[in-house]
Length: 226
Ligand code: G5P
Ligand code: MG
Image (cartoon, rainbow, N blue to C red; front, side, top):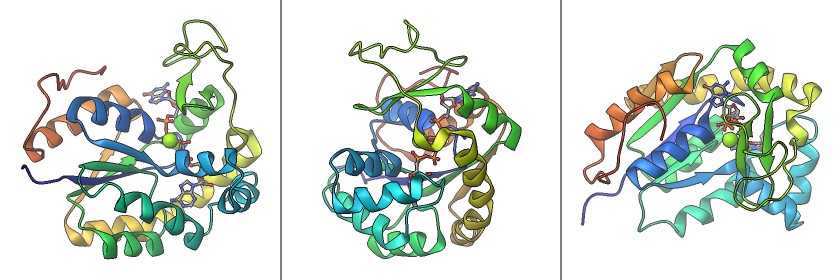
């Protein structure tokens, strides 16, 4: 059996973590685990953690570390047989240390996207709540406006993409991400990508992963679209 591969992808809200994670999952066969999706699943199911998380997300704040680690770490235990990519976790140094105690990472991908680009993108973002599918009315619009391509159900804008929550999220991100970035830099596993376009970043990430993941699916492509 080939060695399992474990990666995290970090970046501010709207930096393209979800979009790039989907491309990596599709091209390299990794499981895509999104902390935001886990939180939203718990909100929909009205679990205790979900109800608590909603009070923070509404204000554009991070969910407290103890709630996030309680949600996330058990999911990783279910994934011991798989290679995975964790999207959106860790967000804080405490989370990075908790993850470090649970497993060894191969790489940490860090997306560095200008603030103005982020604001513009999130203004146009719509999601399909049941699946977490993400659209952007300019970059990847649905076939029919306001309707999910696969199910035909309506799309919504998330609570935390409302302008007031968004600015708070972006401001807070920089402060908490810095120690996490330094933590992975010190471990020698940090790869930072800076650009305004996902399609410019993707070939570079794809090239990196091609050299690091032993078993690449035959349809792995490093072109700009998956
Ligand atoms: P999430 O769900 O992890 P965020 O805030 O980290 O949310 P988000 O908003 O999901 O990140 P993303 O995944 O980085 O952004 O980006 P994306 O969705 O792929 O792309 C953003 C938009 O831009 C999309 O519409 C996409 O189509 C478009 N796009 C992508 N590339 C391009 C491009 O090149 N050009 C253009 N024009 N558009 C593009 O977490 C939600 C909340 O849950 C809590 C927090 O409260 C968080 O705010 N949470 C946590 N709290 C504490 N600790 C954690 N670990 C937590 N994880 C989640
Ligand atoms: Mg996301």
